[in-house]
Image 1 (cartoon, rainbow, N blue to C red):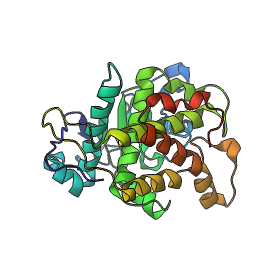
Image 2: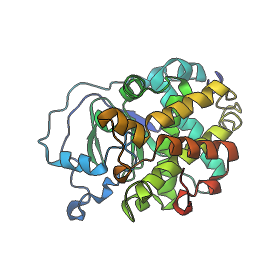
Image 3: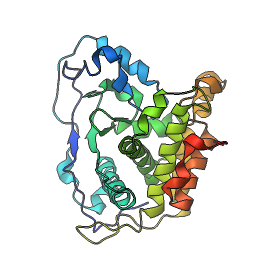
Image 4: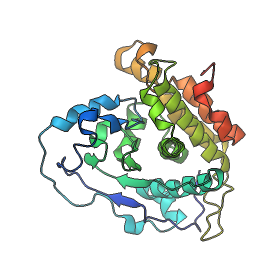
Length: 296
């Protein structure tokens, strides 16, 4: 999926950082509440948020380097089609445009592009957790190196919509946050039918909702649709990305076995199903994974 070259990229909600270490600021978020806010829902690779909490006791490292990204080159849709970091920001602009029309009172999240390590209101994190959303600072975090990992290690398509799907998924967690649903991930049963999986599948469905409207919603400032119409290849790219981060696929690659009891994000088939549900219907009400009897 390509951006219309006439759309203007708004970077005002985006910040960047280089490979600095973990500072002390914000590490005590939640204090005795045990890492609560680590409801850093959405460790896209299926990383358990509790694993990040363990890093909070690490000795701080000195910050080094300057910003790893130059957003001054991100001005138009043409730049989004050329540069990955611009595509991430432009996708965020597009998702904001869609949800602003679908959800009354919608407020955009922030985007943070980082390399290596980053400090968040949910605690410190590094590249290994993949893209994630932190409710504590209402920010979606991305290290662009993840997208190559998605291709090289997990077998995803490297197409633009595969990347845009990842961004829309994290924004889906922001929508859940605004609706008061994101905390459900930490409550109730665990495993293949648990609330963590249902939370992630709903975010996949919300990503599909975005894809449904992405080429028709127009940017207010320019009157130009954010993206060009989806092709069959675009959808195949998104479904490829969804399949590559299914819990069963990741487990098979890691150990050759599948253990549904430890699932946090859902199977490849489930992730594809719920993205498709959102894409085909364009109706957020169809994304009620929490009351679904059959997730697959």
